[in-house]
Image (tube, rainbow, N blue to C red; front, side, top):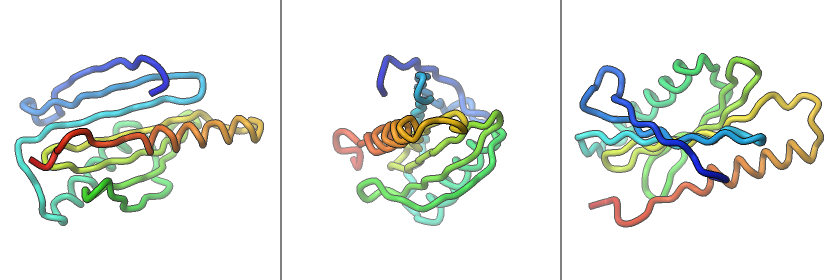
Length: 145
């Protein structure tokens, strides 16, 4: 993130034993969000992981009042993931990526305001910032243990 973010830890709705770690930063260019949730089960079944990613996407859309624009399956190393773009109330646009890694659901989100009337240079700056942020997510250490 291009600055010092704030971190908030909350119990997951309906699962008081599970915590959601939410790290956010808002700048003039965009909003940056990174979160992870640690679960007790190590899930390796691809169908179960797909369901988890679907629920993560749907939860993100529902909690923001957004509308899905597009989505695709992605991978980080050998881990399953999903990328989606959604429109948000107030003319905002968000691109999110989620990955299931052993017992954790990681999500990164890049949010921008409406770009009507912005110069091509500003639009390009935001696109570059989105790619840089979303592509910067990496796993450290050996998380497969």
